[in-house]
Length: 107
Image (cartoon, rainbow, N blue to C red; front, side, top):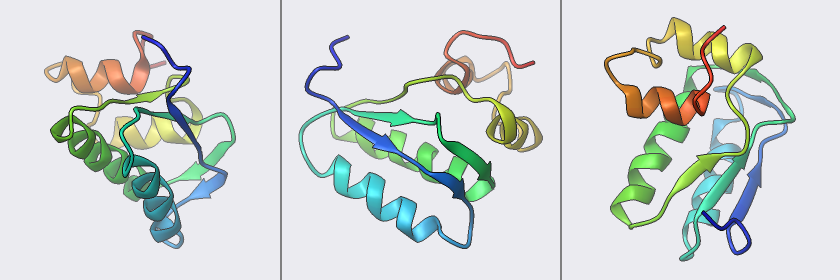
């Protein structure tokens, strides 16, 4: 996996329903090219279910285009709580869990 030519998308502090359209525009504009997209969660603080839905949708769209979206770090903090409450870390869907947790366990 080479990250040299990939795009890095950084989400700042809060991504919730109140500003999800900004986050949507950011990730979709970066997906318009031919490169894979890496999502940097390091500055992410407050999130809600809309962020998770956006990333899940973007993953599917990227896959349909033969590209990949990957996280630069596993979900933690508020994002991890949203994933747990929303049932996104179901052990029956190992692919989804591996994407969000990157092989770590949900603490």
